[in-house]
Length: 277
Image 1: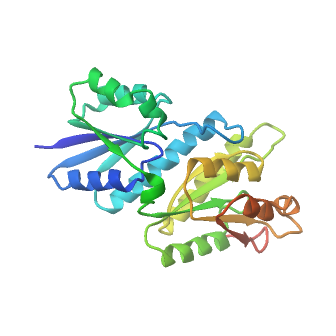
Image 2 (image 1 turned 30 degrees about the vertical axis):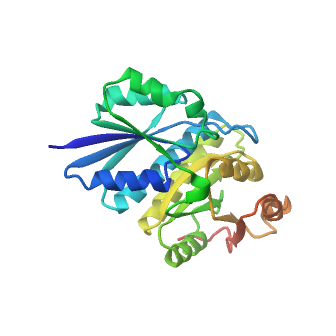
Image 3 (image 1 turned 90 degrees about the horizontal axis):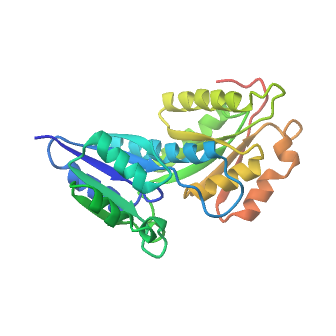
């Protein structure tokens, strides 16, 4: 008899305890999973656009699904409402699971628990609910994440080649690509950025890289710092044109990000605007 399990998680979607439980459940024959990631807005930092909040949830979902499918676990997923209770109830009605797994941070750090999320869901459904507390800071993640910030150089061969080198050096390396918005006189900024992001991700995936991506703030420094509120990363790659052609370099982007974080920052320079690959 088949079994379908609904997993609700946001910041803890890569938590070791959650993934261990999913692996355990996956040992049962004919078990499949649906992951729902509610949109979560950071409490601190720069202004976050609504599109960025949705993109961030999509990135979390894409990376989690890539990881689970890499372990031969049958899983699909969706983005949920900003209210985790609404996201959970909507998903329960839609997917009709046999079990719901909800993953949160510990009580002291979890806005979900402060709103009695587990009890409210248990009171609203007859489906068994399992609560997993993931202490991300202590557990770490079972994979490494590299943040890549690039705009016109996002699809360049030199950047992809460096990413492939990094992926070859580390097991379970995932990449998050952030493409900052770019001003266009006809107002096509978002459309241009999304097209560039989509083309870039397609190229990277064809080369075997595990990637997801989002659109960032027009200011590349703000886009980088916003991304760091959403994700735990072990490395940052910033890709630019040569210094004589790069506004990012003229604004000292590399030095500013390096000073503001405790994360290794690597600079990849596209050799020339005509570079393709």
